Length: 357
Image 1 (cartoon, one colour):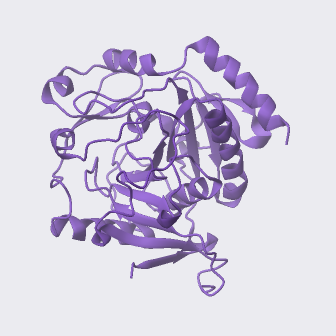
Image 2 (image 1 turned 60 degrees about the vertical axis):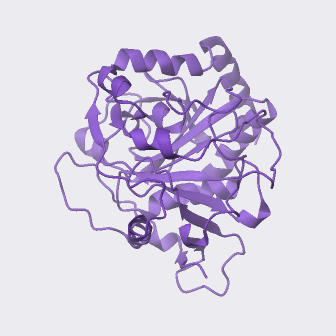
């Protein structure tokens, strides 16, 4: 039986700071379970390759792209499925997370009213398993009720637990993300990615423009065109519902999308004071509508998905890694995003869509 990780709202951590100094972070219980479980399975040889310290550099420029060289991921990972539609049905004959080695499961997450109220826990559980082809330390997958065989389309439950997992971590470098079908999802079985990246990303504090502020809905400024939601611990359920309304709309319109969740400072148009800028009391959720890419992805290429859009660049060959520049990477990323006229037309539709409730 899988380890049961029971949590409640009382376990959420709000007072997290991003410090320039190297400090020893005291891991929260969530971090201990994820990190120890992941490390144990790495030592058991359950991964496709051993993840050593990755060669890492920050590209000069405004965006502070974090580039990493991970050659083994391009060589050893399981061949991605061929995706033909954003609304493609689940196919139990293809690889899915019910076919994994049970030892890959780290835990099952269950939320209760409080930490002692286990008997009244809801039936929905989030299964957390290692990604056997890891991008970074602690790379795991969050799979809602695997036996339900949900296709790779976000649900409110999946979004809420994704946000809650960030609040459960004391590490500002813990990130969660999602790739839709047509946005370089490799498996058509509902899952989110979680991993630790011990580098600050510009998205944590970059300025945003309010669109529907009462729904915590904003647009990124001076970055790849995309949307931003922001929530603090008390508002997770409400914000998860609004995010789901947006992603449901995108699915119905056959628009591929990527999400990235990270600790971040509150939304602002102008640069905040230093104390405010270092605050990571809330979670920023980024949604990028983008051009669809169907078929199986090329494993040697810089495939633009949740990491790349967030400024984390996993390179699979040394030549591309060594030659990478902010200008060159931005040019590649922009090829995958919607043209600005399409984006702003979609923005108006979403403002109306969210404003109806």
